[in-house]
Length: 319
Image 1 (tube, one colour):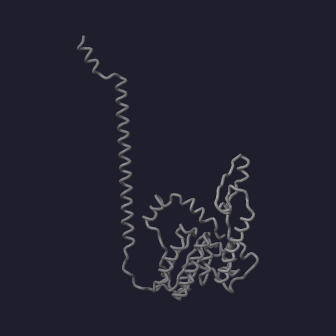
Image 2: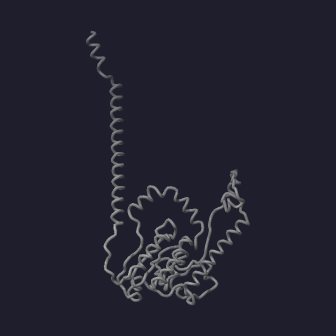
Image 3: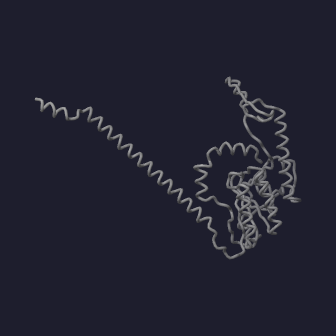
């Protein structure tokens, strides 16, 4: 009897068997998860390594191509801002390369932008004027769907502005937008506790009541920036501009109307300008392109917190 009892005791019970099966299942699941994570990190490091190699290959200077007559193209697309593809740094680098190429007979800015930063646009406008004087080359602005506000600020530096009949052109004005939540806070019983050193440090805080003095100061600043914009347009367009009551009101027009108002010179396209004006049908794009490493850096690193910083920097825009 004792021998039988001993062998029976060595056999696992149903409960023990279930626990062992659950443990084995959990262990295998954990191993699979760890394996997946190992493969994820391996692939990520491979991607980083490939991006570094790609960057190195892209930055290796290539043999200079023979100088042949062509039309130099620089794209101005999307929002104009310090952190965008149409930043002043990118556009000015592309413009310098285009002007310095002996084969470039003229430079064409192909614009499709709703506007953006007046600072970035002003930097590009100034650089175009400097490069034109230094290299004695003409600049054409070819506007596609939209050439408004800060984009038009850039366009007026060109010798000619060419548009499509349905392009949106103009919007010569400045705005500063925001929201006010002080009334909502009073209704829900929320108290704003803002501490500043400097009476105007919390200027235009959306959670504080409106301050007429601060608003007047901000309006004066906007008016001054608007006058700067107006002067740039007048300098760029000269006698071609037909000033009307709404010209500098922030209103925009289609391309056909813009030609009639002197905001643009004529209807046309990039190919037509290269063929008929520049007399060089070959078009070479000098636009600065983001490489893979830069895109990865923005996605995995530099983009952290960029939304808040961008909102602060773009509080004042030309519209």
